[in-house]
Length: 451
Image (tube, rainbow, N blue to C red; front, side, top):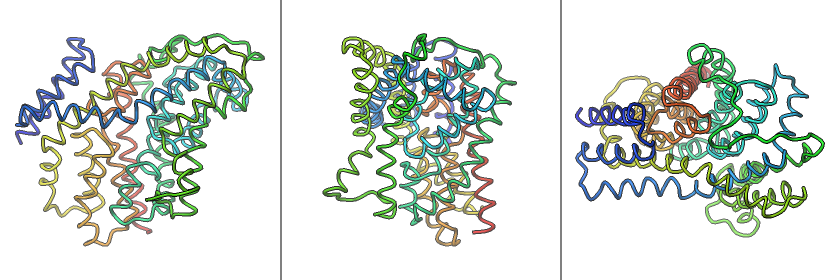
């Protein structure tokens, strides 16, 4: 019990530093990580290594993905591409249905993209649409985040559902089909439906903003001088196309599984589907499509690049700080102690898997780590009770999204990108993620009656 007390005190201390004493979030996360490590009885020389490993494992890939994604998004925005997309969507769907259009677009994009990449690419466009439609950013941002989140938790080829499918012996194609049945109602309830409720209990967050810290003030454009809708959408979705091609190819030729030792054309397809490679290729295309092709000078584009990188520098550090906190909790043995609590439980395997994953998610922060840890714990129960492996994958995915809070990188990303304070983020993002988790559980339990 002492470890859980240390965890609770650590989280309260972190909130106190940020909210009460206004300490920088990254610094507060590192301070808290070190103190929690001491409280968990870790050796003093292990604590800095855990912090370093946590930051390194998180930012190794994200540095390129976030950096190039932010630059790509800013290039589209500064060239007027985001304004063109916003104007065209509003004209086609109307202001009343633009929220639905954003959610559908985010869902489609989210199938091929990691959550973080989708967020980076979509935020500038959604911000431009919100300004053009004269609605609060969160009015469109909540459905967007809900759609990206459900694809992250339920649908292969995302890391957690793909890895859990392999661990539990579930067919990824079956998981994808069942996952769509779970994800669509979860996105609707946590998106447009929840937005109406959030406006009532967090009204101060729903204000029309003309400038975001992460992106700066939006420029004014003359429609006829902006890039065409087609090339603007193509540039924005270029990483999606790269990853989508790889996804479809692996489903057709390798049962949805990644190639273990690809050669020839398989290696090429695998390469373009890698998030880092996809962002590099996409940025090269963006420099042409939103830059030289539009008659922009290279020096002007490099100014855009510098501004984009500056805007996400602190966000990257905060995500790294959250990952350091997560690593301290893992190395401190919290996950093993949680598994011991449930080892002799007689609860339904599906419900038990969800509960274990939720507890791990709250304690560890990372949805992927919580899901993979839970999969290892419940595998013997699944085999003994003859539970459908695909349903087990989905119920674990649902639990891995619950109650995102201060030890989750997604929490800080949502807070920073939408210019919210910690209280507003807890009221909106944490509740949104929990709604997805509960709806996901209910849908899986209902499906278990028929499959």
